[in-house]
Image (cartoon, rainbow, N blue to C red; front, side):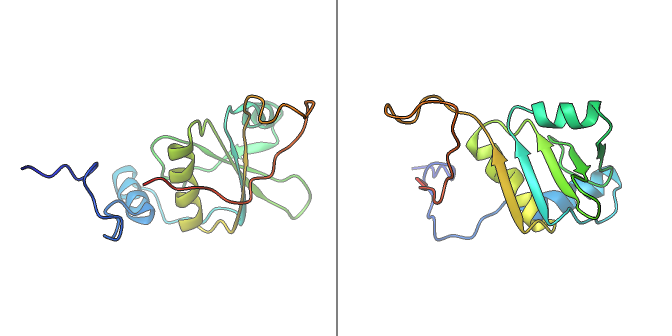
Length: 138
């Protein structure tokens, strides 16, 4: 019987697609230098924050960010501070990949801004939910 690695795999086996290797390959293909992202970064699922920051001139594109599917913007919310912001990180698997790429590139603190349907019947919007842990089903 032929083995299908994406379905029939041993989770103890080392990953083949490491975020650092993906970024290194993208850098080579695009001819980009190695670069570091800000220590603090935001994932903006729907991209509205990024659009507003760019339109107002408060965020600038980072030309060294090698990811093929996202753009990293640098935003200085206060003098001496800098935050990396990436929009369009829709879907948990994609957001996790981008988060791993950010951590590989120097990010040490990450906040993901998202939205969801009603999470509990006894709460009245608007409110914020702080996720403290995640389940993994692989």
